Length: 289
Image (cartoon, rainbow, N blue to C red; front, side, top):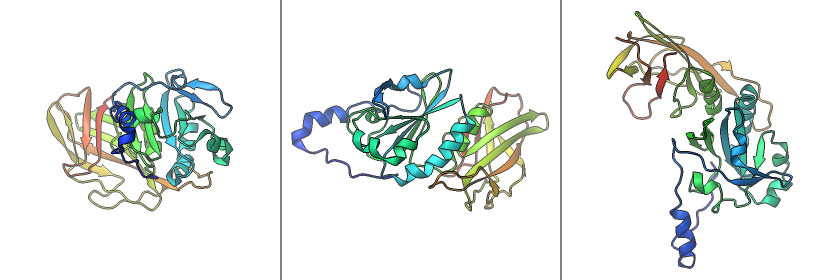
């Protein structure tokens, strides 16, 4: 993201004030979102929780005007916003001063909810969600207002993967949102899972041969792969969408299927793990239905 220098908390003059900020509870994944009062560009007041209309998911986008990654992400967010119309609301929460935010051309072009609480990095809505001075920071909220996912900085392909996951079988792919399950087929011969992987054009990914599923307290080994080579670098070639925004990046995707040993008895949910190394792909609580 765009780091700003953090204030020195050993400043004795501000002791009591800083203590209050430092002890403020930072919300974690699984917890209920915090409501707050914000203003739009016209100066009208809004409550954050207004964004939860008709069972929508809500993505909070904490950003500032001097942040390159914030601008890069806009292209992908625009695509996702259109694909998820009526299912996902985006709330851009600007961290600049109200006057700077008002004046800037970029602020004026934002098509989703574009709000600011006037408190910037100090003690406003932001300090309930994270406690360092950086942007962008993203928080995905479920329709009942719980935190599903948080991300610091912009991960290319993460929002496209997030949208696919919200439209696909129930799954928790929030460790690596750009890898998503689109279909699960399970029968006596095995379990075949259709995946899609999004990444910046020209980048590769690798799926290990020792990937497995876990369910009913045991492991089910990978038996076949279709559409990729295992333990090798695969570079996605299919264009995800056409970039329409100045700073947008080209994003590609790759569809592939993995087949695993059959389940002894079909579970309610299962987990996918790409081997036991560090930094492996993990998708949890995958629903068979």
